Length: 86
Image (cartoon, rainbow, N blue to C red; front, top):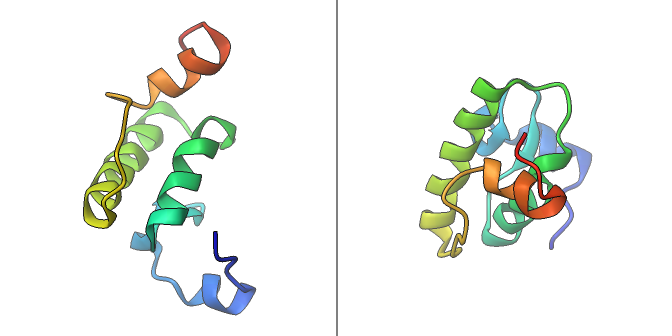
């Protein structure tokens, strides 16, 4: 995955992040979309409404960049790793 420099990350508009208010999980290419999915359950300091909105952004970005999703929703990411729903 191409690493963003601080300058590149700061230049991204908020809408390019899964969590725009926190500027967490950039979604500007397929590699970053896959990374956002992999790290989704590690994001702290957000509520379920913010996760719902972030998942919608991830789904849209996945479609845009041709990333295949195997989960129907973000809650499956938590269940898959822990065996317990959030």
